[in-house]
Image 1 (cartoon, rainbow, N blue to C red):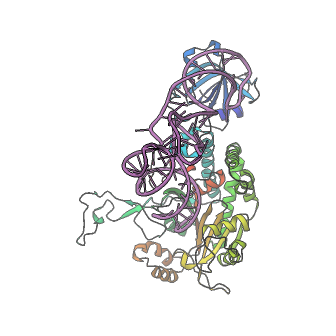
Image 2: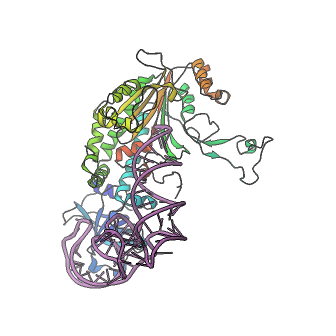
Image 3: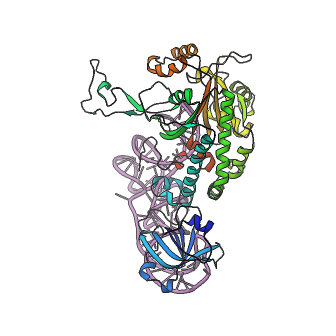
Length: 481
RNA sequence: GCCUCGUUAGCUCAGUCGGUUAGAGCGGCGGACUGUUAAUCCGUAGGUCCAAGGUUCAAGUCCUUGACGAGGCGCCA
């Protein structure tokens, strides 16, 4: 019966016989195996009596090989570890030929590991990262479960293409050769699997709203697909999104919920993943050594995370943000690539970064954006003095280094206002009859948001490319593994 | 999609003004050592210089086109 290395370190008393199984991370001095089984970032030192071990076995203890070891757990004679296993028996499960195994017992670049994503789990960095990713996912479920939310599974395949959240991937079983056509020469989707054109979901929000209108508090946590030709360190074609939706919440409740959730899951990671975070913090420190002084982060990773959990997010309206940006030094000196034109246009990412990283130096929640640059379902605000045009009860949470991590709003619950907005934005009413029904039958104020899970992992892990925080990233031109 | 930079040994990279024999560290392999911690020491092998075309007496080096990668921008979570 094998014991996991994490449990062994935690519970197993000295001078007991144990069996451990894992992968060789180093074999030093023909004598010391550093063994990892993925249960924790620490490796177990297995000591081999090389003078009394079959040379044919010794020969096969190579970096990457899968082995088992049985022996006494003893206090370590060496310095680097508290305990070690003195092996009386070594079993080789899987050989690993170092001449062809792509990984090497040395620092490897993230780019190289990305091209070998099937093997990168075996590195310290990605081991830590995927344990952290798991803990964050678990913490999200725990947060919502503890507050009485219902986890709602919204469909991955959807017929609605009216959400306007981005380009969609078509789902079809129609043949490419001899595709059925109607009299107008268009593809005849009535002959397709679902009898109509379908796509992969870009958001579960509209369906989540239906659930919230009866269950009160729901959230989704599932894969989301965007066929945008986005080539950045913050975008994926397939990513995981969390979308809570709460009946009777207004914009402020919504902000409170989002801020509380972010702080909760980050605290959870700090508490439960200290060792893994240490590995990621050290990695980041090492990476930043090669950068010029002024591009290095001011805080170490865990310090930065604590700063986020310990301080209130800055909340301000879009209109206030525009005023700050207009009067900012970089804008006056023409340092922005896009100067701040005035009220009504969307903020460029350099503007968001200035607010978050230079001006406030903490997470920022921007609210009440111009209606013209936001989605149709956001609640229309009453006109306000000093605000030049119509706004909606939207909120975006901006994080340093990541940009937008949350986008949400109070929803437009008034049928006539919603219909009027849909007409203005040329969104067909018939197709979304089921959505409009929520406003016809027992409508109520409600609010929700979308959290990009990989962006959260990116922030908490200190990684810099979103393709490194999901096991098998999908992006334009790449669907490997 | 646009902009910038890059592609040289298994990995990370150097390669001067275009000049004859393309280098280093790590990794691999062989050996030594045997309480190591990225072990150490000695030795050794390893190259379609991304591809195609062009300029030139001569191209890793210059030019053109393409592929791929990284970063930035746009779209957004």
